[in-house]
Image (cartoon, rainbow, N blue to C red):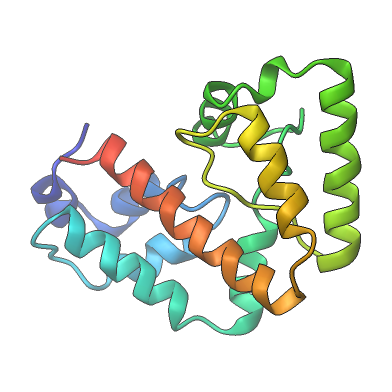
Length: 164
C-alpha cells in the first residue's frame, strides 16, 4: 500500500511507474493526472483520473478501451486483470462455458470493434456471462459509454486496493 502523501511527494516518473497499471496498459492517463498533484485524498485522485479520461479525445478513449483484455483470455494481462478475472471464476470455466465466452467475445468485438469490459469484482461467472449476453443487444454508443463506466469502476477498485 502507498499513501496519498507518498504519491504527492515522489517525482512524476516514479508516480507514473507506481500507478501505471491502474489503467490497463494506458500510462498516459496517470502521466496527465500526475500534473494535478497534490491530491487531498484517494477520492480526489480518483476524481482527477476520471476527469482526465472524460476530457480525453474520442480516439484516446477508444485506445483506453481497446487496451483492456478480453474476458477469459489467456493472453498477457496486467496483474490486476489476472487477479480480478481469477477471483470472478473466469480461470475455472468449463469447456462449454469457455467456448460460450469466446463466442460471445468474438460477436462483441465484431459488433463494437472493442473488447467487452466489465468490472468483475463481486460477480460470478454466470453473472458475467449474462451481462455479456445482455450487452450484446446495445448500440455501439451505449457500449462505448458503458465500457468507460466499467473502467471507472475498475479504477476505483484498484485505487482502493493500492492506496491509503
